[in-house]
Length: 305
Image 1 (cartoon, rainbow, N blue to C red):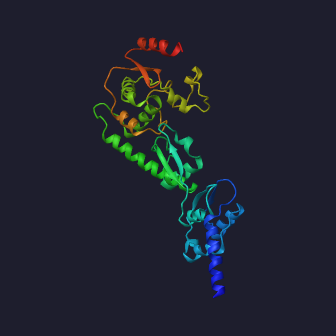
Image 2 (image 1 turned 30 degrees about the vertical axis):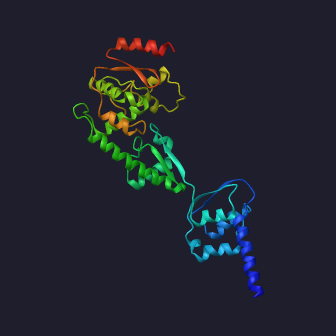
């Protein structure tokens, strides 16, 4: 009886110490990888001077949790007790990471060439060009291996948005292909704010109909190999097919990942007689029907800055 009471007392002391004990040190993250087992986890934590009593370790084994530890990143806060750390691991309370695809972002800057090549191989996509095909949104993941799954979700979602914009296009005003719609939308995303996209879309359509050079800065910039943010006259003579100062028609592909708003504006251009526009301030442009008026607007809003 004495030994039983001693055992119960000792167990209670261990358990309550476990509940209250807080490790010394700063907050940190640690990763439970696919091939990690329970011993690996305890070893990682013990390196941080976080120790679990044997009786607590046995809970993982008895409940079978040692065979199904949830993979991912775990955050250990400075004020977490050992018991709180135990709960995080036992219940798989991982920390999700954010992956943000901004409107107007460029696929080539979001993902490595290796990952894009792997995706294209898996999806049997040739040529491997995903520019414009990744839907802008915030995605969440816990393991680096899931980035390619995010890419699959984002491309499928963007395809649906493109199809919807194509179905709702103004067939009387938009006479081009679905891929052309995507290209124009990617240009609108870089050239304008929401309130003027349909109007600028109309300018692009008017110039295409007249077989005029589009002369869009953002397409030209996309084709430059080295660009430091300052577009110069010599850039406008670059031989890239994206240089719409040198080559007529649309560029050969999208230049950004457009929002749904830009996709809709591409397929629903405003009907007007404007052929020119120049920025006069944030999210605002001056539109002109002839070159002389356009030059005056350039002189007023650009050259006098």
